[in-house]
Amino acid sequence: MSATTHQRSPAHKSSCTVLPCRDDAQLREYINRYWRKDHVLARDPRMFDFTYRTPWVNSNRFPNGTSVLCVYDDDGEHGERGRLLGFLGCIMTPYPRKSSYWLALWHVLPELKGTGLGGALLREMQQHAIESNSWIGTFGAGPEAVPVYLKRGYMVRAVRRWVFDPQYDNSQAFIESMNQAEVIPNEDWLRYRFDEHPIYSYQRDEHGVFRTESNEWGVVTHCCKLWDNSENHVHQVYEEGLRIALAEDKPFLLDSWSYNCPGRGWKLAPEDLASVFHPPQARGNLIYASGYPFLPMKVSKGDCDQDRPN
Image 1 (cartoon, rainbow, N blue to C red):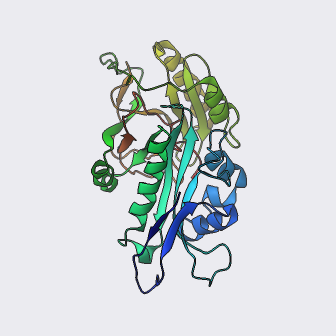
Image 2 (tube, rainbow, N blue to C red):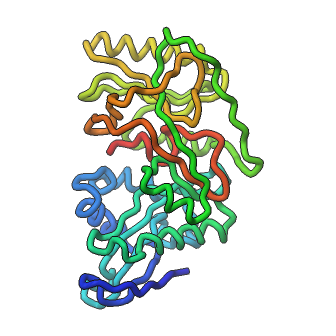
């Protein structure tokens, strides 16, 4: 399946076509040039493959095995590959449906913004998902993207950042209800996403998934997944991370993202707290999850690409 659009501009004088990615190297060049120089998906082929070439990629939809849709201008001036005008990537996973498209990186050339190419990419990816009875959505959208998703039938919900303080006494976590069509991440996905990560090492057990790192901000423990009845274990993880921070004479942070309070000891993050992505800086503590035809019961740093190295 392909979608053809005919928007024109001085930089775009011919029709263009939305197709599955033809050339990984060309896409990585585009990411490096137009998204961010030295972005990890541009400079590290292991992370590119880990993100866009998961075992759950449908080869009928993406014959090259890379779960990315691209806009090409086949005007003959750029060889067989065609000029790459934009792209929309997704991470193929087995949850919250057995076939799911977690959207990750969406971009068109700056001079083509407003021409409808970005919308054409999203429409085509959404059509892929609908035709295969899959789920499609993302975690990490900014407020400017909310109307875009709402207009296309997605459910959208705010996600807040929480920090752990063992001295903070609050009420228990709010229990969310699963959608009847939702499945939880299975062992194959957890093994792939966390145990086989090409860069990071995770602590994963029956209580959750955590990763501790030292960076220029300090020592940070990322709560990437948090299962039920994990309150006591969270205290242990906090104490372990705090010991590392004290030994390095650095500040310490244990944080998590969720719709509602994750449980006792968790409080809303202050607005001036760095996000601890690289480079660390305060970027706010409210982002959005979107999903079609439903939102998953929970979202966390382990979903989409929220804890990968930028």
